[in-house]
Amino acid sequence: MTVGEICDKLNLEVLSGESGLERNANGVYICDLLSWVMAHAQKDDVWITIQSHSNIVAVASLLELSCIIICEDAEIEDETVRKSAIEGIPIVSSKKSAFELAKDMVNLGLGS
Image (tube, rainbow, N blue to C red; front, side, top):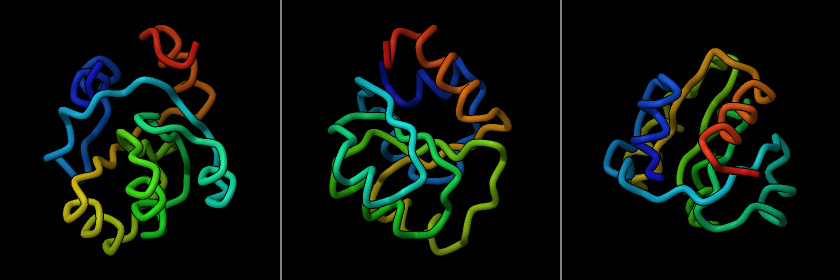
């Protein structure tokens, strides 16, 4: 399933990185501690977090994550949006909690 398809099915708002919407998503990782994500997330994972600092884009790029979902409508820093656009890593937003998004991902066949 592509990031764009996930966004459509879950009504996620694309904030930046539209050029990466065709990336494939094969799993889900939920964590707010960047060093932990770097040690445990896998290539092509969707990353669910409330972090909004520009370092999230660096971590997602390094690990080749499919996208970053910012949950609970957390505010995104402008620099993060700019870096996302440059790297082509989609950042999308949801009003839902990480738990609710996790359930949605399992229902889509990801993260199960």
